[in-house]
Image 1 (cartoon, rainbow, N blue to C red):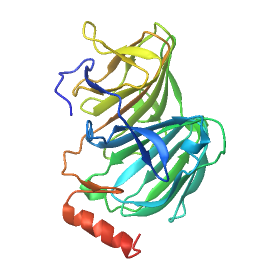
Image 2: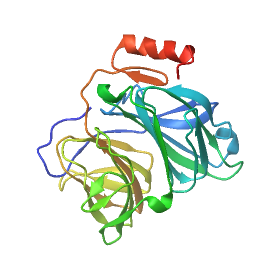
Image 3: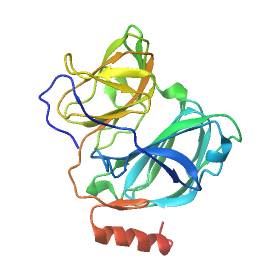
Image 4: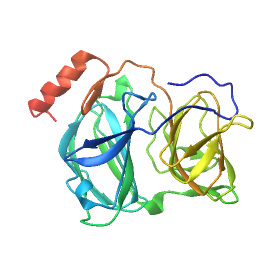
Length: 286
């Protein structure tokens, strides 16, 4: 999904606004990664954005359903979401909180709104697991907003670091072979900042408030609210200038370069493994 770029600042290769869809029990959302236009950005399998003030569009939530072979990361900007799974994981996140679940060899979980009115606004990210970890033990953690460190990138530019590292600051996300870097960037109007994306990681930038120009001097591309920009490979940072006040979700991870066999809630490496996942779930192995 991306092209080589020999160091320095990354370029925006393509822009998508995703596709409207429904998931769970009818939750309305926008699928930005995992769509026909952008099937994946190895090892990033999916990004869904949900944002509504209408309880009818989210109240039914995501009742119990299975997963195997990857991780889910839910980040709430506004609202409350309750997680419960069949391995004993349970928690509630509110504004600024994160739920991180490693499905591994199999888990059945639910994600239900813990509110009946007001704004529900957040993201769910799917990260692939390498073949050697697809059958690892499931794992779950709630990360409260207070656990997410804030880093000042430049005057008027700050970063909430959910996963990965910047200097001596480390996000609370777990260590994984894909070395995920997940950051929420908040920029005042006219602010410039360099986002420290690890060298060699696949990456995207999703503008969910305002607008900003991304890319090296002479080659910036303006993204407005709702735009997701797939970034080039190779560079070790993304240069951003806020042409309006902006908030940007930056996600990067180390590519696995392994075959992917996926269908619905299961992501494996071969069709045989995929069939086995369905069989195991139907037999109650999960």
